[in-house]
Every structure is written in structure tokens, then in C-alpha cells.
Length: 160
Image (cartoon, rainbow, N blue to C red; front, side):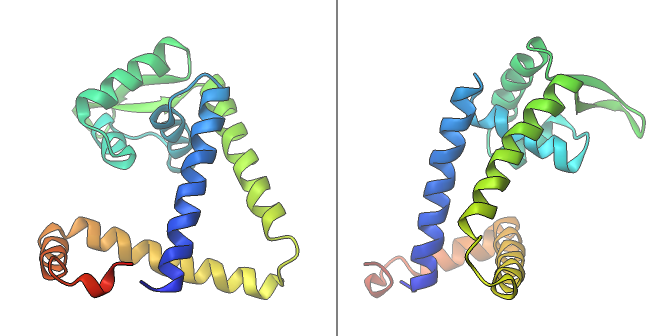
């Protein structure tokens, strides 16, 4: 396994732990916190788009949106481009919560890279953007990912 893959795995695990703690402290579940931050950055979305983004079933997303709406964090509105669907948007309260969540996370990243040369941080951002696009593309191409996983099935040399 590549050293970079190990480091990214560790970053993902640390980010998950951070998100779980931050969400709990604000009385939210991780998917609910993720929905707030996603809406903050991406604007209104359909419930199905939010379910895909958060990685939950549409039924689970509906339950989370119900809780967020009951708490006054989101509002559902008719979609002006498609009368058959709705859009979910942040309320002022939801925007404030999402902003707090992301500002705290962003501050941790800034503090964690404060001693790193700004050119290195900029290059890291380029590499992370590239990796993000590649992983999103692979996730969207299920047959290709399935083939890759099947190919690696018997190859124990890729695992520690």
C-alpha cells in the first residue's frame, strides 16, 4: 500500500472522528451536519441529491431532513425548474450552524498547516483536487470500480 494512501486513510479517519464529535456537540448527527455544510457551500439541493452526497438511502435522508426542518435548520420549497420536485435550503439558523461547523474545521486545517510553506500548501491543494476528481469519477463508474475490486480479489500483495 502506498505511503500516501495510508496517510490519506488516516486523514479520513481523523476527519470522521472530528465530524462525529463536532456534530454531537451541536446536537446533530453526522449526516445532518454534512447536509448543513453541503447546503452552505452548494446551495439548495433536492433530497435525492443530498442523500447521494451524504451516502444514505433516500428514506434515511428524508428522516434527517425532517429532523433538520423540525429544528428550524432547513426548509423545503417547490423547485422552480421542476414542479414535481422540491429543493431543500438552509434557514438563517441552519446557515449559522453550518457556518460554525465549517469555520471550526477550516481553522483546524489552517492551524495544522501554519508551519508549512505556503507553496507546499498550494501544491497540496492541487493534488487533493486531482485526487477528489479521480475518486468521484471512479465512484460514478460502478462497473469500472467493480472490475478493479474483482481484479484485486486474489492479490494479497496490495494489502498490509
